[in-house]
Image 1: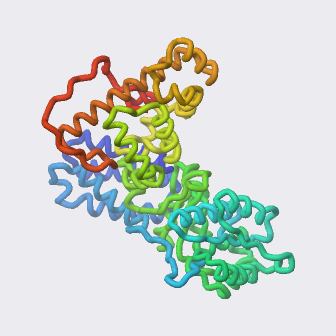
Image 2: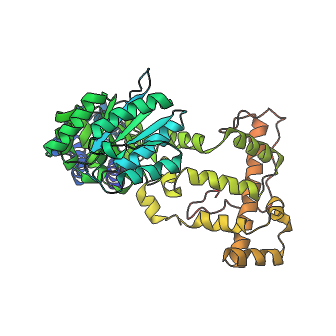
Image 3: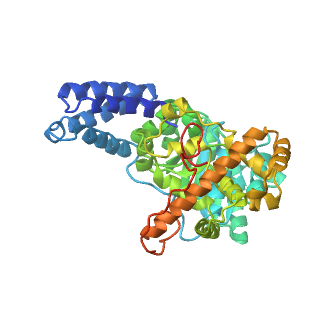
Length: 473
């Protein structure tokens, strides 16, 4: 997502850092590179011109050229303008105070509307809502069945019309609302058929549905990979339906990002969600400031924290804190932590949310995607008793584990050595934090203990390797 654009912008800023103090020529050259980067990212030409014009106007001011840190000032200007380009502030969906809230999804064929119906349902179900998905796509073969399968996966009901109503999507939508009121569903998601804006009959059908059910949100589902074409059909749909927002899908497959950067600037309609993966939980609320931070390589810690809060249970976190204090962290706990990490997404995507980590760095230091599954296979090849007490793992047991997980004894030994180093490091960190009475992130404040310098653990020479990054597992 925005990998190509992000990499090019960071190269531009790196060159500026080598200049020390900036001249007007330096800024003009930098803006030329930024312009080329945006155009290569398939951003609308007029959007690029306006964006660069605003940056140059501010960057050539006296307060920047005479600043002690002009590069930081320029980066701040670019960051502020990116946030403004993406919409300024987060615009959430309008939820009706008197349920049910009705969301109508529309867009081109293949944009991902049906899958998005499932993602939105799961998103609101996690918030304690009771969603209902409505199968209004009567034209695409197996569209109704696909929605039913998604409903079964996330335990969300799907309203399907009886055979005699299968010819009128507006009637299906209206009947679904009555069904929702009777069954206590407070969010209705209408999955409509894909269509072109130039197809008058199908567009009139959407207009009739909108008039009959009066949805609170009319969301255009946009495939992020279509580039500048997104702006054209977005304007056409908006002219017919008065859209209230966009949802960008397939953001994980688009390294350019031109559609997301152009569509808001041209139409003035906010982007409300973006789909960042194939799994049903891969849906993020759209935050312009966080996305701008990602593009400029400054990470997205807030989104990472939110993901962690969803993935980690409070009781589990409290148990982990206790075990770290008591130095009783074992391989069962390690297995639980691996499951929590998997809920956050791929290791590569997690690292990209950290400040200073960019695609080039990950390309130069690739993360093995099979790393965690291999470690998990080793642990699952152990007996419960062995996981609770790793000291039992003698040579014969390790040989049996290696055969069970399909790896060599050397790989099993390496994993156990890394695990033991990690335990020592965690113990040392807990001792240091407790001695200072400091807060460990996510674990509350440690009680103040008498000041003492913890002894360095023997044999702890370096952190275990994490791919080619030196990080604990």
